[in-house]
Image (cartoon, rainbow, N blue to C red):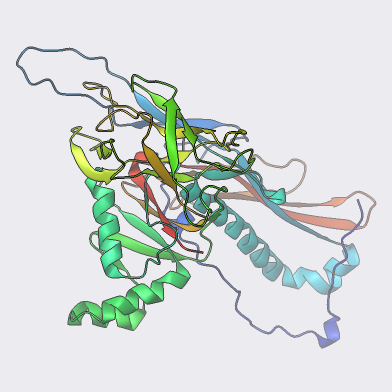
Length: 434
């Protein structure tokens, strides 16, 4: 293996500048739920999976006569399928004369680069996608992770406290864990929101936000800002101008017991990019002859004020007639008495939906439902290895180094493996215009 072309300074002219690092805002890793019993402390490999439980669901019968129903354990899996490393090498002469006393700076820069790759990856749970090949930017959706509900249309700016309050109300109206609600916003959108608050006559709060220019805590939620939030690139239907409604033709389950696929008309004919995985849909109100669909509350099965929204789990092309078959999440269930019932009426031909255009994805999460696992890697025998685990954050990193025998090359590697997932019903995507 050829030695990389290092650009090093001659010792007699070199001075440390003391310049600070150009940092990004890394809030996802630091706020994710990393508390897995023993999983983050043991050695693991790519592909290892941990399952965690989700609350069971039941229904209520309005009588004193018991109607026994089946109990189902609900689980979600978290697979450790991401890996990354930062590596660099020197000749022995370079290391002795230029680099040995500077290794702390090389190491810090390498770790910060690695940390931001992980942060960006975890943030992609907002768009329901995780990378299969981080080096080449190859991403694939994870159908079991990420929000299916959303706030914002991807066109109208989100720039006021009033909009944030409405967003949290919509989030909680469906049913939400009130503890540990976290909101992740694009850094560039925060100043306008803060400015809208300063225009309100609320002296004490205005003093706080004016002195920090941060949102902090608001409406029982903690707000974070990030410059690493992902961009979702929608398909042709979502980016059509003007927006093109799609009309329901049929579903995979006309009874409404478990609708996971819907066929729509109205797309451009023979379009390979009609729908992209992660596209967001909302059923439209006021369609002639059709009821306005609403979500039921997740617990209690009572009609909420929230329109039915869902997410495409795979790319979908349109046929020659402009029909497109979309795989969706979550499953939409209208069967009365089912513990999984979540919509007020069945989905039938003639109903219409609209697709959200490309947008930058913020995120709302309740109940510490964003999970991150970074288990310990084994020693890289025979090379000197340091594998460090932080019990407070659950983060594990490995560092090892060694020489190529007889090749005058000394290499250093920082690496880690991780996996993350976001429980869908505990989250909501925020669609900011690009």
